[in-house]
Image 1 (spheres, rainbow, N blue to C red):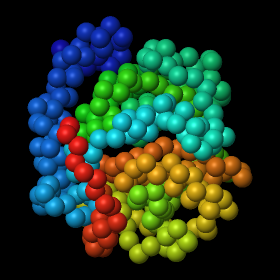
Image 2 (image 1 turned 180 degrees about the horizontal axis):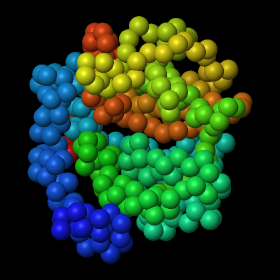
Image 3 (image 1 turned 135 degrees about the horizontal axis):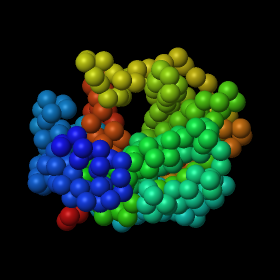
Length: 316
């Protein structure tokens, strides 16, 4: 009976609608939705780092990012993290020429129409993180499986998972964007500019994301930085450092864009792509790794924490 109910919820529209309240309640329990934001963040921080979060005097970057989840409130954040609404913000601040072409926006998973899209594209939700479906050839897509996946992704947002305030109450949407590929058909390198008070302090480069994901960090003048900043599993980083890569030809312009887009915030990570003499905007993030990625050596967590001047606490 249990297996049958799971299948009905996963594979049918009416089963999903009927059983979703039960599934959402179980998910609420699993995600400890009964805890306050502060209690949930504290529990997660203790579990990840093995020590309590010092709410009264946070010092490391991860402590401060989690403090800002709870106490920093800037209405512009809600626009910046919404992958649909941020497009107008970016166009107004730096120009629409930096936006990835947008093919369609859908309000529900069942509204997705593959026949109206290009042969290759990316589907993503606006209210989450990492919930992307890459399509290189739509003739090979299992439309039913795609619909099932987006039905699930649309039901739970980033706020429920991480208590990141800007995502709270965001109306979910599905975006279909152009698929960016390099000259050999791979996903392009992802340049992530970590900005403190509108100034780039370190540049994260993610490469080979579909094969052997590696991650390097560079100074703004492109010196390789001597640390790893990653999720860890079994005592090892999931994304260790890789071979050095040359700076993108458009690095000065990318730094200008990142600093312009981050100027309104104490900390923001601005994601950009450089492809065929074009720069494309990816997204804006305020809590890299949700404030739960380890530095090695750990002293860098404190070093970057010292560069983040916390604003006054807002009343949530």
